[in-house]
Length: 278
Image 1 (tube, rainbow, N blue to C red):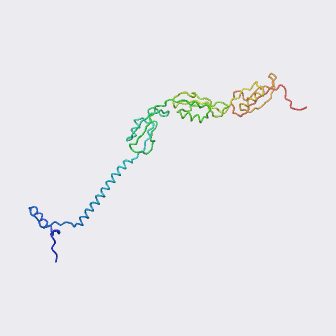
Image 2 (image 1 turned 135 degrees about the horizontal axis):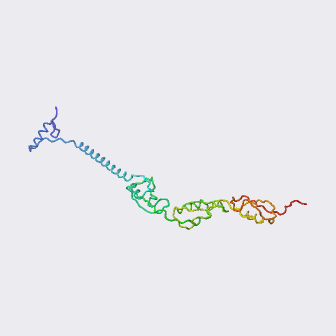
Image 3 (image 1 turned 180 degrees about the vertical axis):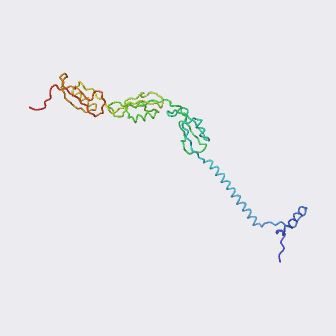
């Protein structure tokens, strides 16, 4: 035998529910109680909703943080702007804080970007500061005063350090070691346009043969030895010349010869030299 359901139980049919609704509309009270879900089920629903709210809030917070972090870490590659005008370089650097400074530069024409910091291809954040140096043209430079006596390699480095170059080298005979600077044009201490060139005279490693004609044999030997030559002796007879003097030489005086080469002198012998014993 089925037990009658309590008033708080669910309605037996939709007809009963509709009757109660009509009673309520008429302003009369109803005796049937609307079924409520058990308390345990209510807590379960509330717990589920709370957990869902917490999860959704966490996901939103993570999304916001990720977006901000991504925007803050956006890196772009620094473009190459050297050689551009200031306006052209600025167009290539949207979103950056640009600082302009000026300096003389012997290689970059006036009013063009001579250098940039950071360098090209560097990965940097948008909004980073960028320093552009605009060329004021070559400016002036002073020829170093200590070039004479230096090697060509060292002289070239000294000139480059002040913004100058070697325009021409002239090899000339000298007793100095080969490649040593003998003369500078313009001279040391002169003010010239930066980027311009100077002329260097350097020792070729050759020396000029000194004039020997008319010297006696001992004097000629001394001069050649001091100049770094080897002496070769030839005897000859010329009755028109004093005995014992140099009447010919080879190579001729003024000829450039490598230090250590031989020079032949011809010494006048008025009488044959007899080296035999009686």
